Length: 358
Ligand code: DAH
Image 1 (tube, rainbow, N blue to C red):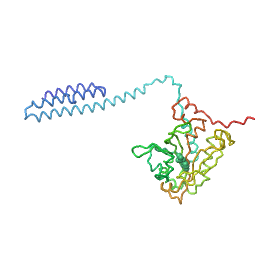
Image 2 (cartoon, helix red, strand yellow):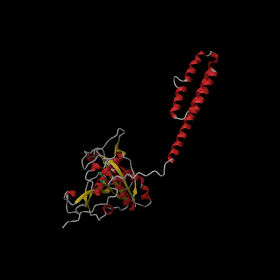
Image 3 (cartoon, rainbow, N blue to C red):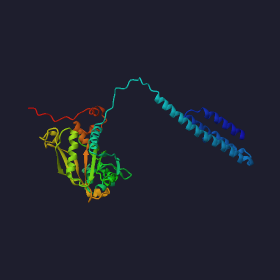
Image 4 (tube, protein in one colour):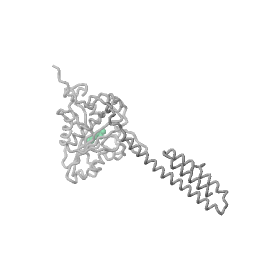
């Protein structure tokens, strides 16, 4: 038995030393340690060993088994290391004279508009935050003063997961987390100023104006004595930069449970200059950005004292803004993966309203 065990050990040692790939190693494992492998067959010979030698023989076989297991594991690590080095060397081994492909990717129009807005808001002292796409009911609704069974939920049906989570219906779902995260700003006597763009999802019937997946950019500003005038100033400044012209805005009352008062912010139509055209349905105004003064209950849920602090919030439709910015008439283009349509905006500039032809 001792002799056989030693032979087996030697046989294995020879074979393992020449193995160079994980597949070969696996083959060896099956050959020696598998159910019908060499170690198992040695084990089955135990029954022919006299009883007083059985214990010793069993120990010998076990040692061989452990030897094989240990060596396979060590060899596995060695092979993985060699493979890594090979990949690194191969990566360095590129031809610097190889011609660069002329084909170049381009940014998605939403990304372009998003970055532009981020730059503008960063210039006004705003921080930029990212937030989850999968959220819970509390953050999407409850913390925003939309209790269960509130009719406002009807407008925001979404995709619910079996984990009781949901795909966020609006970027407002991040408000609670942002207020909590930035409390230290107020303690340091600085305002909370944050924007948080994100992808949102709703159960929508898709047509040229509606998508089930779209982008918004939410913003909040909280401090002592923040008023509607601050809100109007920031929105007007931002929109004038986006459209590269002085933008006239107006506020209409609008109901959203998380703001009081709430507004719909319209801009004077940039296509007709307010005279009325098909793009603004002859009204001269375009609905662009719901906003309002943050509701005391939302501040409380965010850990802030509404007696001490006030703030505004807005939820800009990023997808809609991109449509207006680049004259995209069908919202379905954005998720179409149609590179021909999507790649033409990188160098596009905003088209000024057409001059009146006399
Ligand atoms: N979350 C709202 C929606 O998607 C939009 C909105 C309205 C955001 C008012 C706000 C706000 O921050 O103040 O319908």
